[in-house]
Image (cartoon, rainbow, N blue to C red; front, side):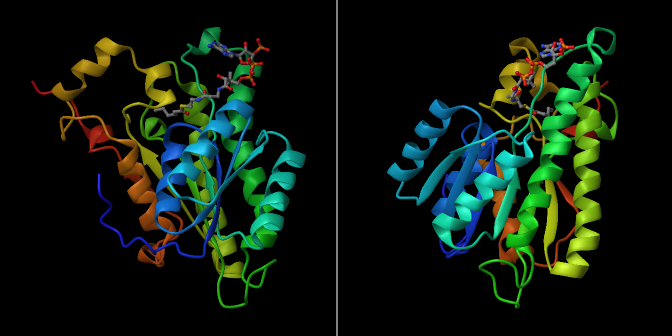
Length: 268
Ligand code: HXC
């Protein structure tokens, strides 16, 4: 689908996208590239990264991939450093890496709970923490006239409660808190905007194939206000809004992009 945004809204910007090799992270990388950014994607699987980078390059996008696990501080540091060495600046950090599986609380080991918190919540904080020196006003490769921006991919499941998702609900609640607190402190001190997007069910993503059985999927339109699943494109357009100058006065919020699903109830 054609973008409603001008193709140069991210011209000259450099974006690091964790989990950029697949799903929503990949679509954000592609749309950032199509709107003028150079993109650096980070992921754990070399094959996935390599194929994502060549797909991006075949679209004419300047893209690099770096292997790394957001759970490891040294990986976060190295990937950001390598991106800086390659491009000379970092303007945007997107935390899209996440882990998930369906499990009831009684079957979830504390280590399983911790694993998802480590990826989603601690991983997001770690990336933000290591990216600060590049993103802050007057930071490495940056003039004193403005800071960069951070975007976290969250969810809506912790607004209420979700079956078999206690670990992810806890993790995404933390992710939203990280966005708000960094928006307050780093917005004030360093001119960095920090926001989130909470996607609803999005077609053709690892989240959908892992979490939503096909029969539920086909019933979704019976209770969803917009009667369809979202597309990765919908999330990427919100990401463009939040990270470009279009969103320059938006700070500390998590934009829900779910077609109104989280507040809907079955018809009766
Ligand atoms: C119960 C499980 C489990 C499962 C893992 N564990 N899978 N418990 N059911 N299906 C437990 C293990 O038993 C172990 O605890 C602990 O978790 C760590 O497991 P590992 O396999 O060692 O972890 P690791 O190899 O690091 O894998 C991490 C992962 C994996 C999260 C488990 O699924 C992963 O890497 N996923 C990344 C990709 C992904 O999930 N993408 C989907 C994102 S979708 P014990 O006690 O046995 O040691 C998304 C949407 C969110 O995020 C919003 C939804 C609406």
